[in-house]
Structure formats: C-alpha cells, structure tokens
Amino acid sequence: MSEAADPHTLPRLLPMGDRALLAEVGSLEAVLALRAALAASIPPGVLDIVPAARTVLVHLDPALLPLPGARSWVTGAAAGTPDADGPAVAPTEVTLDIVYDGPDLADTARLLGLSAEAVVQRHRAAEWTVAFAGFAPGFAYLVSRDWRFDVPRLDTPRTRVPAGAVGLAGEFTGAYPRETPGGWRLIGTTAAPLFEPGAEFPALLTPGARVRFAAGRARASASGASASGAPLSGASVPGASASGRDLAGSPPPRTATSGSLEAEESLPLGGFRVLESGLLATIQDLGRPGRASQGIARSGALDRAALKTANRLVGNPEGAAGVEVTLGGFRASAEKPAWIAVAGAWGDIRMDGRRVDPYVAHPWPAGAELHIDWFAHGVRAYLAVRGGVDVPSVAGSRSTDVLARLGPPALRAGRSVGVRADAVDPVPPADVAPWGAPPDEEVVVELAPGPRADWFSASALASLYEAVWMVTEKADRVGVRLEGPRLERTRTGELPSEGMVPGAIQVPPSGLPTVLLADGPVTGGYPVIAVVADGSLDALAQLRPGTRIRFRHAHAH
Image (cartoon, rainbow, N blue to C red; front, side, top):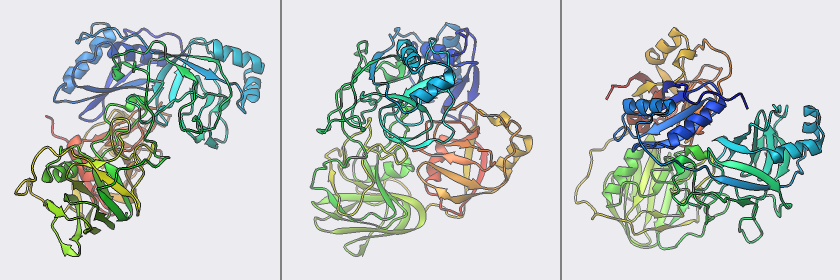
C-alpha cells in the first residue's frame, strides 16, 4: 500500500450523471479513510457507497438527497464534520482458511526474491482490509500495510481460474468466488463460501472488512460445495454486526444458499409453460439497486416504465417480476387461468390465434396459447401475469443478470414458470396509460455530466452533442456500442478502475462510445465522458441496430 494519506484531505467531487457523484482522492489509503467516514454517517437517500482504486462513488435518490446535499455530506464527512449523525460501525472481521497450493507460488516467490515459505508466512501474517469489490460479484480486492510487494500479473491470463483460488496482483490479494478467466498469480485455495446468491447478504467480503488467512484443509471440490450442495466450511465471521447495514460494510453472517444461475431451480407448477423462448426471454423485476459495493449490478428490466405499466394493467405492484421478451418469438400456454398484459416493444400478439392488443389486460384461459410474435418496432416487451412471476429471489431480486450469471436462467422451451399471489389491485376496467410504438428512426437522449469530460478535446465534447450517432449490432443488456465520429482524448494514460452506473458512456481508446446498461459492470477503467440521464435510460432499451441518436444536455431539476 502507499503511505498513509491524511484522511481529512478534501476529495475532488466529480459529477456522475443526475443520480450519483464521484469523490476522487490521492491514494487507496485515502479511499479507505473516506469510505469509512461516509459509512459512519449515512443520510437518508444514499443508495450505495462504492469504493474503487482512487475514488468513492455515491449513488443516491435525489428525491431524498439532492446532489448539492450529497456534496455537502461527502465534504463534511471527509473533513471530519459529517452533516448526518450515525453510530460508529465496527468493521467485520473474517478469517479465511487457505491451503497454499497454488500453481504460481514458486514462480511468484522467485519474482519477489523470496522462498515460497517466506511468501506464505508473510501473506498469512498480514492483516488485510477489503478495499473494494469488482470484476465479479463477491470478488474483493484486499490490501495490507504489512504487504509491501507489487506482484505483476501473468503475461497471458488463464482462460479458467477455479472457484476458491487465491491470487496476487499488484498490491492486492483476492479469492475468486467462482470459476472465471483471470490473470492473477495463484498461490493457494480456500473452501470459504465467498458468494452465496440466495443469502440476504451474498458477499462474504465487503468493503472495510478485515481479513486474516489461516492454515486450512484441502478443498473437497473445485466449486466450493460438497456433494450434497452445502457450502464447505472455510470462513468464520466473529465480529459481524447483527444490524446488517450493508452500506456500512458490516453485514451479518449468511445463513442461506440458493439461486445460482448454474443450477436450475425447482419452480412451482400452475403458471404457464414456455413453448418457444425466441431470441432471449428472461425474468426481470426492478433489479438489485444498492449492491454495487458487493460487485452486484442493478440489473432488472431495461425498460422500467414498460414493466411498471404492464404490472399496473393486471393489478400487480409495479415492481413485480415479469418476462422480458427480446425481439419477440415467444410462445407459452397457460396451466391455469390468469390475466396478462404486454407492454413495451410492438408486434403481433395472439391468444389461441386471435389478435389481442398490447397495453390492455386480457384473460388467459387454461390451455390457451399466447404468442408474442417478432417485433416490428422496439426491442423488448414485458409480459406481466397477474400475481407476478414466481422464481427464487437472488440477492433481493428475481431478475436475471446475464453478465454476472445471477438469478434464474434464461427461459427455454419446456420450462414451467410459477405465478405468485402478489396482486394488490383489481384489474383496471380501462387503459392506465397512453401507448404507442417505440420510435425506430431517431430518438433524442438527454445527457448529464460525466466525471472524465476533461480527458477529451473540445472537439470531442462538441461532437458528442452535434453528431448523429448510430446504434450498432453490438447491443445487449450489458451495453450499447455506438457508431459515429471518434471522440479524441487529450489524456492517454490508464484510468484506475472506478464505480460505474447504468447510462455511463465509456470511451475506450478506439474513440467509439459504449453506453452501459443495467447488467453492465459495476466498475470500469475507461473514462466516462457523460451519463445518460435517468429519465432517458428506458428509451435505450428499445433501440434497434440502425436507430439514430441525438444527444442533448439534460435539463437541470
């Protein structure tokens, strides 16, 4: 780690759209100090506090905490005079059992000029702190004052790193919560359940937690689970808080496991059976806000307004889970009578061959076949069933996250989907909202300021708003790549990874921007030139390849 930074040094506050701000400090040490100060004085309206290498992202609800108030709170907390009072929260203390059997241990020791035994002794003797999370849900970057080494990553990353592998990279150590590619140097393995999707607090290691490694036993399996599916022992959490305030970084011990995308859940019968899934059909609600500090994206419906409307039409709470159908081609048969509504993208909808309208509630008789044909306008439609779709909740949501592989698997032919009993209102006798086809030719999208606009030339900033951009075929739930003039950067160095939000417009060295969406990564290393205003995000869900976009400055509220 770098030398200790003055925790009272005021951060540089940068805009991150209309619902977040980025506090930039001079070192990782200062990040840890600022995160701790913020976590001790959280006012209403703060949704998430996301530390990274040199920044802390504060995501907020401006209806409860406007951006000027958030700036005052962050500045006050950094200066030691927080605007909001809160109890001091003791950091979580975690002990991880580890077996030092990694394939890179001997080579890493040679690089550091030590014996393998000395590397093991120093790694185990150090007291580590979780600096931030990222890369994958539950993956924590650990730092220590006791560890003074800078370990180079592998020249060629592995295509497969097993779950539980413990590695070194730069000043960090970390453990992989699941099998994934990776370039860290592997020195050991742990059997600890690092990420349990079905638990109330899925990530074992959260920012601010203190971690020690202890000699452990060999793992029983590469997945970190026994043959029965129960998590292996390998971690203890002696100091966990019973209050479970996740923003403060001290969740209680976890008690449940379920809901991984790798294992198909047992779903209740009595809802509907999928006959054809089309290009992609997933279960979505309003997602998992407030968990980015654990490496978990918001996810949820890309067109939130369409899902809310479909739910209101059948008397559901607005956030009830429904089916997000991408480009159409979806067929299903009812296993019991139900009410349904479809909103969002525009295409032919038929019930047993009879055409029915979107944005209207319809009875779905038992045995009847619902066909949502390929869309003529827009990309995503939402099928709401009265009562809400019934799948296990994972990290507080029933949504499928396609990047992180959280939540239920994408629907496929033959799958039976249950229906809950969560309806709160009668089916309305009339339409609840005006409706029409999503635009296909050109849309106007509002942008709020981004934190790294000063990385770009004046001509790039002008082009962002003056050019007509084109949606490319590289568009999915993770993000949308745009075609247009290349945005020239005036700074060419690397940007340390920092927190991201849906709508962030990242610009890689190619100069062609990508807009991150709900399943996008929670941290990123490309500079963000601007951020799509929250009120324009839903429109991005319906943009087909070839659609033109014009950006304009968001109105101040």
